[in-house]
Image 1 (cartoon, rainbow, N blue to C red):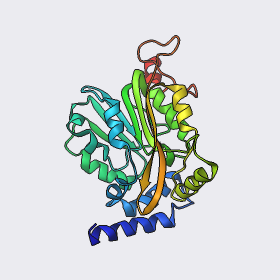
Image 2 (image 1 turned 180 degrees about the horizontal axis):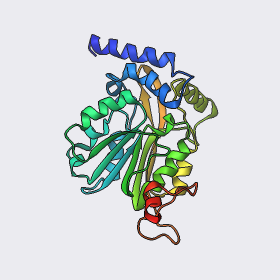
Image 3 (image 1 turned 45 degrees about the vertical axis):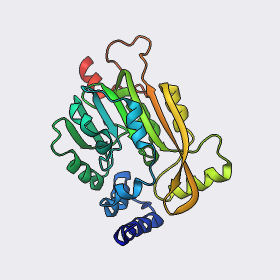
Image 4 (image 1 turned 90 degrees about the horizontal axis):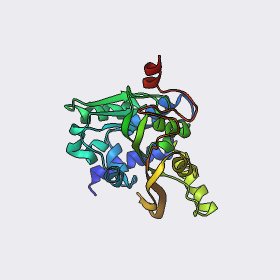
Length: 260
């Protein structure tokens, strides 16, 4: 690795050692933590965040689809999707961190059907139901992650697919190992949980699910646990057409307009 790259990694590692700020709103903490890393964010995390290309491939995104990414970060998913992104009917990329969204907007420039949106993934809803929702290492960064999953279910049309890849605490992991990862990631505002997969499997028909471990940069011998889940939203009893409701019973914005 070149000296310039090592120096850039050293700056990222210093930020990670300092950890995410403990005060301020969620958006303020994200901005304070990631703004100094934004220019090197993707290069460092490409060696840490595994399974993102496999997520895109297993989702089988189709031309003409309406697609949402919650927690899009720098919009690096556009590199993995490639030319197909221009064939979507719409692609909404949602995040709460302005510094990362600035990079995402640069990547999305020139795509007529892509919107980069600064919003809270627990509450933001598209104008109409969508065919695909995916999240790449976003749930662990959102304190109220269960609301994000419920919100994703609410915006999906029946038969629509959800895809999630993220770190977690596996059921077969030993207590000491899980505590190590919980503490190590938690210092930087990444909150590992063993409850993501059970909730995803309760709400969606499972198409595929993989649990793996991957190497961590500059920590030889350490392998962090992560999962990759693809599910399908099923039509609910009494549901017709595009009608969907969240687990809380709240109607999404597009449905409130429809019944008003």
